[in-house]
Length: 285
Image 1 (cartoon, rainbow, N blue to C red):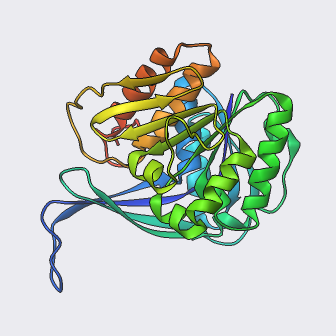
Image 2 (spheres, one colour; image 1 turned 60 degrees about the horizontal axis):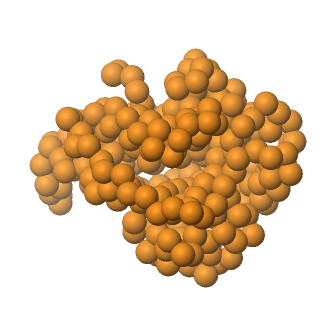
């Protein structure tokens, strides 16, 4: 199964129906959803395969209880620690799918101790760059990558956010990726440009997957540079979680021995289902 290490937090998705107006009302639909990039990937992997594992620090509060319950109901085994406060993200989503995130991670960064049992029965370990951005979770994430690599587990990293890359520094992210040498590196075009990722410089990754919205997906590998067209989505409500769904679809297909074409097709199919809903979910309500 797939294991993801990182955040489990609440997404407050605000779908604006008009331009934001200062000092007065702006019409919107507001939905509360389970969120956090790592938790999203674990959720989508469980929906695709029946089970997955999430590891993180979740606040010891009613919100944390609720979010854990939502994950476990969908087949996700939740491991890690419970202390502190559960965080939230406000996602402002406009009609064209553009998103602005206002982030409070709470104590999600406070995961302190690595447990090798987290990798039992795991074929893929997925870690967003968010999990390398602060201590102590960054040390736990690095330990998990080392243990996974020694077991022959596929390691994937998502570059997550241009803001996180700027926080860490482009050179520091490049050095980190070189040390981690992930099997798969996911990023958007903007994130790729932020770290100067190219077909001939994959930052130590075996395969780099570059997403670019409605434009073709580019995949860089040792012996190939492939481009995959993106079919227009019939409905676009909210882009929250689409990248996490893409990662889950790609990795679960890869674990079954699928070809690169099949991995990308599966990833795109799941992502297209997600953008038709508010929040990182495959449920209609």
